[in-house]
Image 1 (cartoon, rainbow, N blue to C red):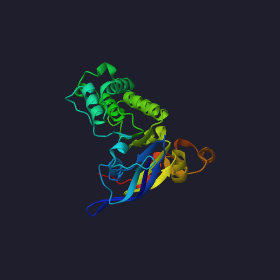
Image 2: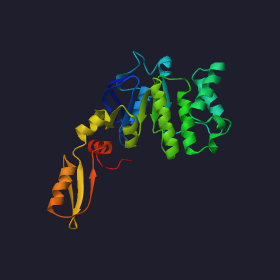
Image 3: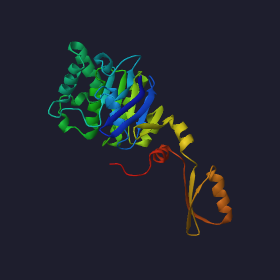
Image 4: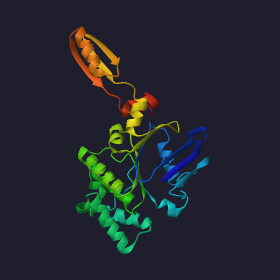
Amino acid sequence: MIRFTNLNKSYGKRKVIDNLSFTIQANEIFGLLGPNGAGKTTSVNLAVGLLEPDSGSITIGENGSPHSKKDRLQIGVATQALAIYEDLTAEENLLFFGRIYGLSGKVLRDRVDWAFQFVSLENRRKDKPVNYSGGMKRRLNLACGILHDPKILILDEPTVGVDPQSRNAIFEQIKLLNDAGKTIVYITHYMEEAEQLCDRVAIMDDGKIHAMGTVENLIETHGGKPVVKVKMNSVSEVIETDDPIRKLDDLRRTGSIDKFSVEYPNLERVFLKLTGKKLRD
């Protein structure tokens, strides 16, 4: 549904997208992970036509372009920075965005009714978002992005600052959209969300894709061995092993184990291995 081909983008002397090539398949939930400054937001801005690449191309659908209004209408975006007007009611927000998308009349009213029901805000449609909780604002933000029934939905950190109940509700809504045939691009810093939701994940840094595949494949390829942390006779030790249970059994035969834990490779370990542990600002 979106194809990046040999894409390059620089701001002055700083190259933020470096010969980037990858494809997002139809009807998948595609996770895009990366530290701050990795190039994720720039990639999205290029995909929706807000930025022009220095070289390379982006294709939407079969042969569409981000610079075509018709092709851009295939994409819905829910940004990390809430794209809602808090001095308008929730209903006025949706009517406004619907008109921007070219909707009007009964079609617009029906889509607004559907969107409110979908995000479970129909009882608060006359309220202003300034009186909403963080989770409700995120759900309204999602409603604005799906109002025009796009084929592709780009979600940038859709659960930032929400409570567990709202996060679970957003997960369920994303799964329903995907089940209905939508292609989802899911940008997040939460590894457990990517593990739970995504069919494939790309780990991006320095404007490049460093690894891409299913979560299981990434962990198998880049996660390393399980780690046993054990304390015996007041001495702590960290041991990498293919068989933690056998290793613990062997250790037990040599002495008394005070305490132990076993850490299996996960997506967070893969992420840190590929992008490093240095703080990014």
